[in-house]
Image (cartoon, rainbow, N blue to C red):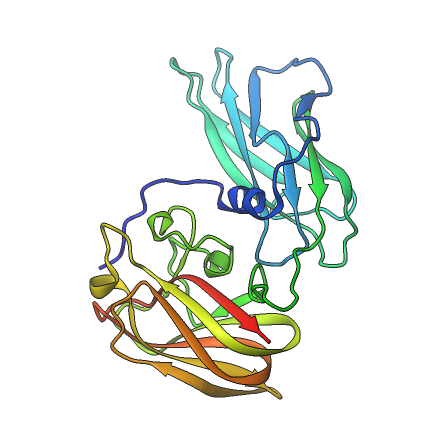
Length: 289
């Protein structure tokens, strides 16, 4: 069974807000009076971003043809400073219909880990109409003793289902009710095990505890849809070694503790799910001494 997608939400934006807090910077403003028959909107109108590879912010772009003729439009994005965009061009055919038919697309915004906190902007332009979106680069979240070392760090997996993002299990959102609409990871090989989900730590660290959240919502309880059997592995000196195992699980949240080990990365080796189809992780957290 594949869990159906229900809504599309800007996960990175919501999660960045949750981790970083709100900003007082001004919202997006038009730079030039609108002279186009294409109306442009952005959401949110201001952004915060941190220099973690798996914690981008997301800007949703929308174009609407307000004229009387069908047309093709190109929306361009011009970032400043260290801002890295997943796309700098959004092109679409825009029909002239009543009621209006908006066309939308997301763009992810990242910055390098070493980026200093500061204020930047993204210029959004169609024809001769331009909107400026303020972007604040926030300080990196703490990764000291007691902090989640996996938060926002680079994830890799044996496969990822098309409804999900690779970073979905290290984005800070462990609410199973958000499964597939905001967060989570699902492998892409139905009824084929094992699957792997790895997270590389920013630097080698002594770890001794992993918190794993599998699917356990009101609609999809863990005893039917959650991860059942898995090993926790640590990468030590370039070699993966098993540090603890879980078998026959029916819970949504499992804490695994083990002897401290100096790890470069942590892996969940997924061996089976309770429905024997997919590996499902809502969130993976790693802690050390």
